[in-house]
Image 1: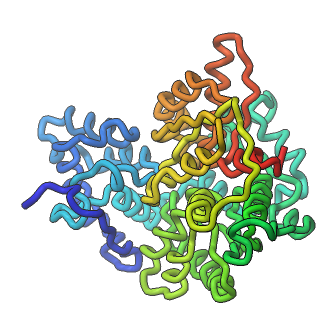
Image 2: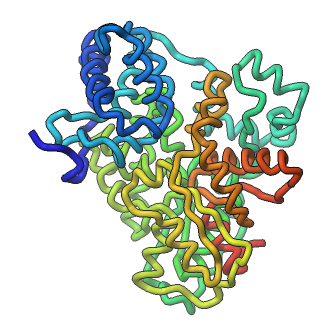
Image 3: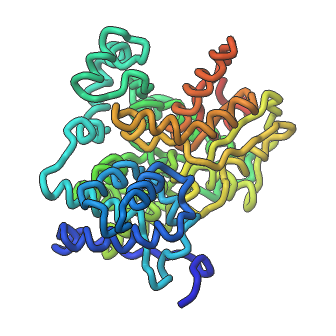
Amino acid sequence: MREGSLAAPIRHPIAWREEDFYDAKKLDKELRRVFEICHGCRRCFNLCDSFPRLFDLIDESPKEVDGVASQDFAKVVDACTLCDMCFMTKCPYVPPHSFDLDFPHLMLRARAVEAHQGKKDFTQRQLAEMDRNGRLAHFASPVVNWASDKNNALTRPLMEKTARIDRDATLPTFAPKTFVAMERRARATVNRAAPAFGKRKAALYATCFVNHNKPATGMAARAVLNHLGVETTVAYPGCCGMPFLEQADIARVAANAEKAAKELVKRIDEGFDIVALTASCGLMLKFEWPLILPDNDDVKRLSKATFDIDEYVVDIAKKEGLPDGLAALPEGVTVHLPCHARAQAMGPKAAEMLKLIPDTPVDVIERCSGHGGTFGVMKETHSVAVKVGRPVFRAAREKGRGHIVSDCPLAAQHIVENVKALAAKDGEAPPLQPEHPIEVFAKAYGLVT
């Protein structure tokens, strides 16, 4: 027996096609085995609310793990946002250690067993239908955005009562046009004088959020890459499935992955790199899809050809170089490194990219924002999302920079709204907007306003 964290963590494929995966008794046995190890270690106590809940359950039991009722484990499962930080950064017992502990995927299995038993949350499953919701919302985006506005005293209390969406949670707005539609209508011009001209081609994987909610991020990414000399195209065969993964609808994730990978490898065959525009989607394409479909050759090829947008820009800067023209942003940038970016084991690429901008203060916050997808908007968990993210909000507020950015758009929105709330208590109203790092980089080049 040896202590862990001495070798790189490895992950086993998710056995979602096997009957034992959905066996409630076998799941309970594994939960108790893992929870007993976690209770004796406690290194993850400050990551999310799952671990304090777990430790309290066991501490209050006269027989420790054996005395905890199985139904009470749901409190631990519900608090997990599948951020992967315990697996990637804290746990000393992940494989190849003989304890073979993968807490996030065990929580995923627990949710899958619940779903298999018919215990499915209607509201969360409807929120997960990002492409469907986006297609419907585009036609009436002013009305949809009005109804979902946090300050709407008519609709938000009703939404909270009927759909359990917390009235204080800020919801994403929908754009009148998708990124795919905007990109097709706006001609791209590649900078032929850039050092990388003729050396790279990039297919921007639009992601559901950028496509339906914030096309400006996609347009900024295209503008930057074109300015760096990279030929671009946009590819969006459908959602990566992260919202469905949160609901443990693994079969739906697999179907999305199989369809999208089949289309995206065509771009790879044409010489394009695949560039994901949000951290969660990059994580899915690089790591989660291969664990769900380990025998799918398209998924394997796609995993190796996918870059995060910040990672891609940094790679260009190191290998080909950047064109001149980056202008200082003296107001500075606070960079939040979201869990799904950190879990990609690529380093703090957003911070590296923004530090290429001359004479620009760059601060880094490397903690969970607490949002976690639907976790951050549901009535039962919104307050927990705020509690978990409070150290991030305070740090960003203390820095007082002109830009707050995150590769997770929901995290960026969550942070900015709460920073504004803290500032309002001091009688201030900072003109902050949630931004993606690539948007700020585009501003430094004068490509967007």
